[in-house]
Amino acid sequence: MVDERSRNIALLFIVQIMISFYSENITLPKIPKRKIAAWIKLVAQKYGKKTGEIACVFCDDKKILEINRQYLKHDYFTDIITFDYSEKDTISGDIFISLDTVKTNSEKFNTLFINELYRVIIHGILHLCGQNDKTPEEKKNMREKEEEAINLIRVFRD
Image (cartoon, rainbow, N blue to C red; front, side, top):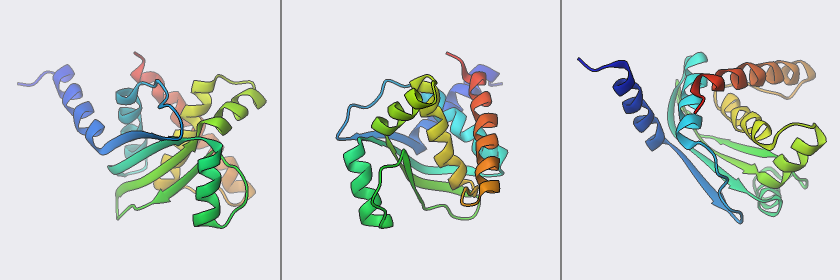
């Protein structure tokens, strides 16, 4: 019989294969990748979803502005752009995150950089799970769901 710890390690390995972390124009941040991957899977499950191929691409403001202009026709900086390739109950996509903007926002909102980074990562995952933030009510709900998800990451403390 497989013990619980071995099962969890096997699950983390499977999750790690499907959730990848990259960088463009910037150094990849030192983050607990396995912990984040397991957390993403847990949040997706909370919304009745499975995780497929998810790429978290960390970049600088120059790159996120280029993507925003090219694909969304927006001429401004943002912290995150999510490209959703999800099918049925399996979430998949590319999540571009500007570490420059995350840093600026962490200073602006007086929060730790890593906490702001977690918030932005999970914001993208929530979009893949079907959550929207176009209206004021949706924005309020999204913020509440981000906070709920951030509280879940404590389960995976190193």
